[in-house]
Length: 175
Image (cartoon, rainbow, N blue to C red; front, top):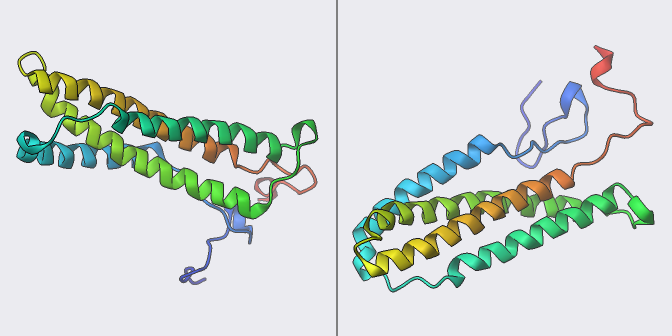
């Protein structure tokens, strides 16, 4: 059996010919966040004296995206499960939602890492330098909102999973 080439999908579990998308792993997101935090901290140490004061809105905008993804997850889940006579979700819409969720979780991990890198630099100086205190508050809000974005993205990805079809035989039971 050859490996899938470009543009092809891997078969599902048990040799099922239908393509599958693996769920996002938390450890991958954590690794991305740690690398971004280290790089962000180095960048901040080199350039902090040249950075203008950071507005709180810089972190809050990510929180708005997180709320939208949480809400979208609830709406899609309701439609996928066909609760309350909800209209079915076209497959392309669900695929795009999964794509958005995967991209948002990675972006949220990077942004969380960058805010954490800023916090590693400003928090120890916050009791002495007024600007560091303000930037620590902004970075804390930004970190919280970025983590909410990761949570919203993981929730949206979870909500896009297709429910088990009771008409299909269980693939794992056939071994």
